[in-house]
Image 1 (cartoon, one colour):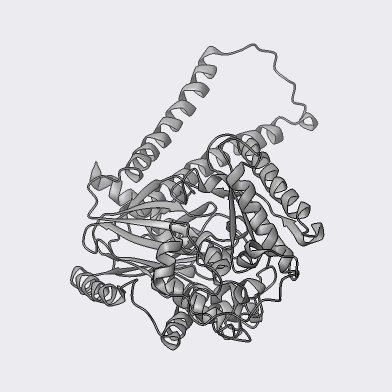
Image 2: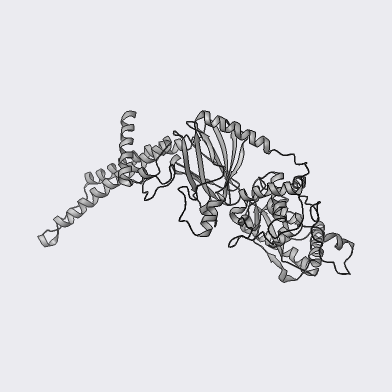
Length: 524
């Protein structure tokens, strides 16, 4: 029976390749999509082969039923037309006919459902995996963490090749390579003939991890965990893309999976672990500014340039970093931006980067292009910032240019407040009224922004990801409005204040306290 099933599957796959397209024979990108492709991607896993079998089996059955039903119908219309003198028969129901046309479709549906159910159950069986990889979707890149199996402990971010992103932005794709918009800096690497469990989640919005050659497609949802699996039976490079509309950079979120032989994979793991060990930096090390800038340039190219561009000018709604008031302002403002993100995930949080990499990229941005702040941020300051304590002023090394003098009437508290930021105002659970501590913090923010007349101020209210979204959003809005009132009551012009859409603190991204805050920061 199994032999017959395999032969039938093989025949259907051959028929599918012939009926669908001949493009598979002329792959533009081996393991990826083809020009004029109509059929499914060539399978390299057993599950993908079963999906091909089901696809063509269902299509053939439906086609035969379609032809049979409409052939009888059209023949009857033609044979018994009125012009030939045909007269309608006068008869009542036939029990035999009704039983037949009920039983036969039922049998056909069961015949279709049984193999489909078997494949569906197999797709969900993630037990006994040789390797487990957590895949995290970010706007717009993928994070890979090797949780169990050979390679356990490895972790990295996979980003679209910067040169291809720039080619797309230029509009001139006449010289586009075969792997255009599929080339990444760090592909997902797995061994051949090993069961790989893929756990998916997301940091910001819903993404979807899809590799057609493996027959897998699994949504990655913030705050939730889903899983799927594959066992690649052929060494090679295979490609996919995020299959969920996840924002304006959706087209630049490719998936590249490299399947290696067992020996090659072991060598790759050994090399990557050596590289990871070399990258492990002491967060208490004090870096020279030139060394941080050099490292920050590499971090920026790998993680930031895709959106902000290599020249720091941004693109479309992406804010420029060159000349940005946030970049040129207090170090804490930019530290807060890279740790927490901005605009409800439009700029993602970069907490997954090391403290040294974060310090390096912030220092680089503050001292590159036309930005000449002279500020230096050390990794140890990010260690503290992750706990919610941001530095004051220019981050402790070379100071930023001196701020404008405060009005003569400002008191000592106001003078001190000029060197602080960003400001986080924390509320009590379920309340939008300012408590004593929140009121004091809001007044400190007002003193600072009253003394600094330039630039707009952004107020971002936060909520957690539980409960009613509408209730949470309304509560965050009221909290932001309460903080805005304190600012205006203390001399900050209302037209300088920008109330932003409430942002969500998802599971794992912060505690209850972080979801009860309003941030008062410089608006880009």
